[in-house]
Length: 352
Image (cartoon, rainbow, N blue to C red; front, top):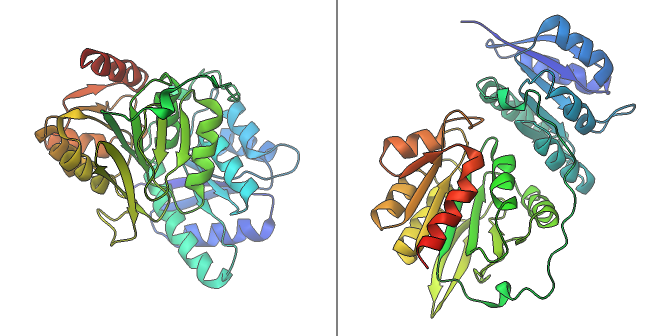
């Protein structure tokens, strides 16, 4: 079987050696080069034509985010970011995902010996997934840094209970897909609950970043938060999120029960709860991601009368979760990513 060619870009010679040794330990991976900065890396990309890059984002001369903004429109290649767990590192990682990175792994901050083993296991898996990713849509795309939006302080949407609920699930490639959907929605949109496969800590940074650039109010969910018109609740890393009904209101409940479909938070857990408590008043969206998490839950939502949308193959970074959801009969309509927000608003407006 053909090996996956990997190029490492990191300014630390120690990290380059660790990554090279760890990736080369997998018979399916071949490290074709290791560059100390993005300028050397750029030349190596042209020379070796790697299938996947691993990219440090905090580097001198030019950081990884700016490199991605220049690279992806000219030479789209799947990139897995290797970032620190600092608050700055988390924020820059989210920006890197906006600029075209497929996924990321975190450098261990404590217990380095055990942490390195876990990191390399995760990195090998994510490099293999990234090698299947569709990044062709970045070709010739103009990538502009997202600017902070000014929200209308007189808007009353957040004081209103929502009688409809939109549930969104995603994994690999999902941070950018979720951003693109939510960024297009007005502040009067029914309350939204989101599960994106991310570890603890990154979900708050992701929510805060979305809140900066979207018209809706976005926050990392807390136990008991109300689902309100104009509000988006992101499931926190390492916690399942369920929707429950409390009187005339919808709220979210968080727990740390066993992983479902290999994940916590799990899209299936969220979608099953929406099917049970919201039923035909719900709208389900399943976006790009590896695996099958969310497929059974979306089928349950569809069977309960919810309207459901799946991202199509052409626009998905990884057409796994939407594919399985479609195959089991949970997806009513498949659409390219750029049409999903518009279709959601059509469905919501038609139900008024």
